[in-house]
Length: 594
Image (cartoon, rainbow, N blue to C red; front, side, top):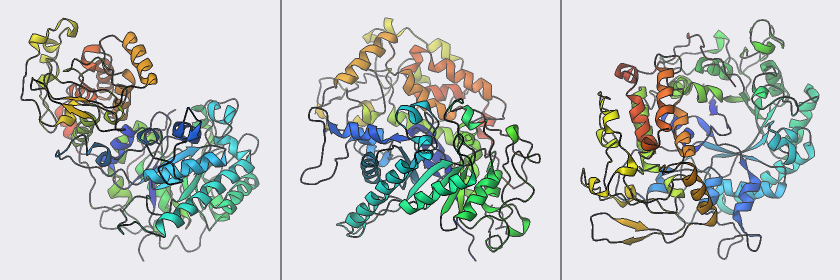
């Protein structure tokens, strides 16, 4: 019998699960389900409206919302092949398929939920999830969704019912009738039914009994949801911060296993406290030796015996758990035999703090023959190439506009007068070896304000690809204007909006001379901070990243250059050292932090 398919998920994390983070993790694993940050449905509705008439803009001749770049951005959608094909015509690069990706929404309004569902489906996400566990005051307080839905169960039911009805309507109007060309792309939901899930916890405040959560799940099942992500600890809406809510309430895996037995017709994913890839696999497939069947070192283990009878709940584990010996009495014991409806596991802080642990997901968890990246150098070179495409350098242009986001979000042209500046010319572009000598760094630093235009001569032939030289808003096509010089200038047909002008003026005054805001640099560098977790050079690498990112002269060379320069502070053998592969016997070294 074929082993049951299990799923490995990377959790939605506020200010972490950005496009950059998801791309970085996707370089490590092609099979894992990666979640977006929570998308507030009200934000999508607001940005879809014509503010003058306070009405949603619909596509011509259709009672359907128009999916514009602004909605895509607020929905967190990113597919490099779709966004950059017009910016880099004729340029080939390794395409990384972003799927499977799940979009999580937050709302307590059925109409907003229905609208968000349509946007999620039009973007092409693989699934949609409703957040019913976030403890943030901004979410549970004024807006009254997230963990507040566990108390206001009527609102939760109405929202889930609205999502289910919208998905059904989309399914009937698109999937059943089919595409006009008859083509259905693999791993996209633009032309197929959108699966629904709800992410919740095992209790909220004083409502922490098994009967309460069973009643809550039962109502959601009746509303049309049959897939649940269970964060196996309760949540406190008062008295604890969101960070404390991830550590103080004890984890209770036996409670989650018991909940699965109460709803055999539903699928469940366990979340919370996963310490390693080996731990994740034991939770997903069960830890009974009789339920494992090796597959020639591939790491996949079947559950043929575990699906037939036997208790899933560990008999000798309970909360507070003396055997697990974890803070606050948490119990993370894997099931003796995995429940048939345990669909998979979810990790959050493990991916954020120790991303290298996910380098073996495809082989060890899914049973693939190999993993996408063999070592940290290969991973970083691919990620740097991505950053240089979406965040072009700003050191070689005379434009005063500030980079506030990705290349597809920009509303102003960039005029590169040289291919490299005096700072970044000592490090070549994508794919070339990184120089070993870093002594030239201080010598190359110059005062940008005193540099004359005469000194900014062509160091290398200017690339003929205009996409490298420009940034513009994708709402309309640019007009290409020939100039007497060899520099190609692309002028956008859409002027800046008032909000962008205000942000530009404020940021220019705050950091004079900086053309890339610190928020962009931080977003781009954040996924790499844990790349050396547990290895020599971790602190040194992080300190160098911080120093370079705060240098106003170097910042304009872009986040890709900053990463290249920071890589020089760590020895080559560490970068080239292969990722450690799991053999099922490693002891977990990571303990989730705040």
